Length: 125
Length: 483
Image (cartoon, rainbow over all chains, first blue to last red; front, side, top):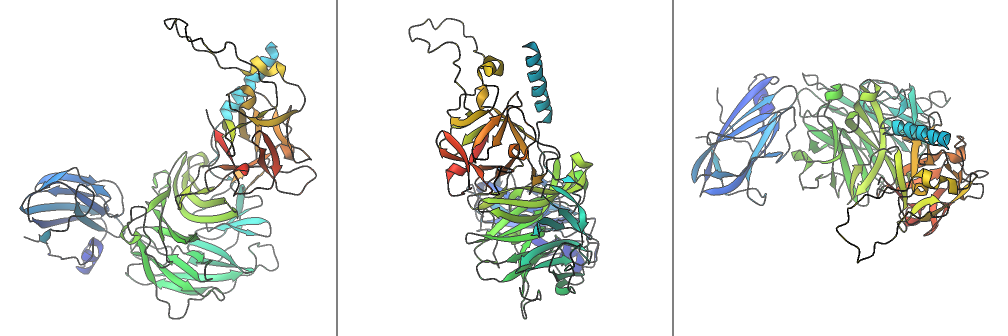
């Protein structure tokens, strides 16, 4: 079942999300989807992800990156190759696996200088 | 002559076989989550997860025998005044539940369990976690702020936040009204330290408790305030997972974790940790002690000294320690500019020991410092001496001319000499410590007829002597160059 969540943190606390829904918290796989609305086409941007634990990410249906192994969430831990954000809607899809312990992730786009791109909005549709 | 060559060859082979790195302590240094090393009445102590701890008389050979009641996880220790404050987590944390944790403090006048003064005070709870809150109250680390005398404990694991609380340094109790502050995530076994206006938060990142597959490593962030924010070298907050590497796996040890700092002298610091697995010691978790260096105001682990053959270079001038023997010229001289450049190029062999050893006196030979020319009288083979004891984190070494048994020694006049054969005498045993700037201090175990602790020092560009170590002077510093 899908749930709409607007995280007020810089990250999404999957552990707390599952715990709050009284779902399994360990040995689980989370799917996440968001829609990124871009005011104009942006070339040479990079998707930057940190996740606890391993995760995999797609942009507009194309695999962007994988974060392998048992790992902790670190801001800008893994960064994709250069990508293009389309004008209008772009769909990010991700999957995060959690064994024991906390589980969370954070995602953002970086420009060519490595600075976060801020003139974006997100929606669930 | 042939016999001599055979002896030289055998010595060289033995040296080659011995060449390597002694990366962990000897004895039975088996421990997990060692507390910061404490010195008490001439012995060293560290406590670990579970109960008990290790004791060492010289800092190199460690065995069980430490006594710490309470069990639980990852203690720390700190000397305040004439007492030792020991802090520990009463529970072991838990990933599948069981996040109720307690941090407790207790005092002891001595850490020596054989002392009549050895008695722990009743343990006091100073912090706790309950149910499924974002914290596991285990793995405490202590900091007595040298700027204002306030006492702090960081604690926590991967389950939620690392937190900071203030403790009364007189009682070991939580300061009344103090509220815990979140200072990091995604690490455990934290520790705090202060240096030159910066507070440093050390955290253990990666995975624990999986032997050779544990990815534990120690990272650091720093802040101008003890309460944070602790940022790494990229400006990332440790509350967002930031952290700059201090030490990771290497050599034959994996998973360094649970940092502790010990200042021996100004400019001489070591860090303690455990290695999740020392492959040389059956993959057990062992105590690690290694130099602590400072680069651009960031701490970084130095490497334990590697046995081998080196130029011993003075930081003062860049000249090399050498035997005071006649310089033996190599064949040939400068090739004249008008020679035929189409002549075949043939490598020129380096000068060997056999080329020069017969020109050397057979008795004691003086030692000086000179231009390094990669000649036999400038190449020193340095190996640990088994059963000769050691000092905090390392064994004593012998320093001999490569391919010979001719050993560097201290004299009763606090000068240097080379003796024809290494006998194991204490003035032939050397203490080698990497300094915080990456150079080295070299000290004889003893100076005959003296109780002074003296170090190898440049008294002139070309003259070595033994004198008191001074971190502010390049005269006191040396480099080992593996050409």
